[in-house]
Image 1 (cartoon, rainbow, N blue to C red):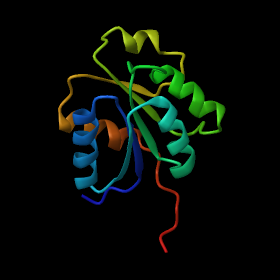
Image 2 (image 1 turned 30 degrees about the horizontal axis):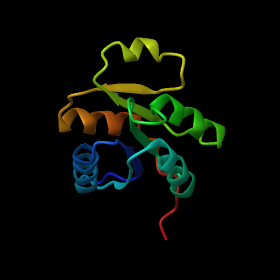
Image 3 (image 1 turned 180 degrees about the horizontal axis):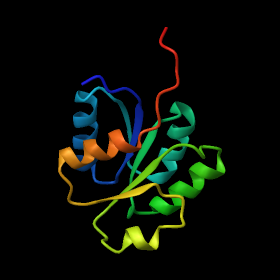
Image 4 (image 1 turned 120 degrees about the vertical axis):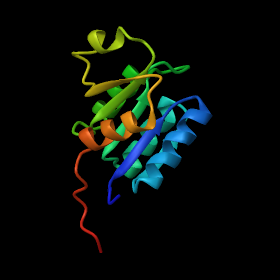
Length: 127
């Protein structure tokens, strides 16, 4: 696949975030990971991702707080996908700036479809 773009994946569950990173890297994306919202905001400001995949429920700051942090620091145009097992979340989060909720458990085809649908095009010029 000729995918391109940088993805930031955030989940406090290490096996989950590692699986996501490995799979999307194999699909051609550059993937950075974080295990909590505080690290994720700092990393997002550094790498300027084309898409953020974030677990909704994490210790400390949750996914909604992360979205608020990203928006506060000027990452307004970055699509954000919240990953959650909370089936009521999509309805509750309609007005929160979340682009989509990916319901857990999801399979890798669902993840890839979600990424390819929502990733912002990479506007960097290759050298």
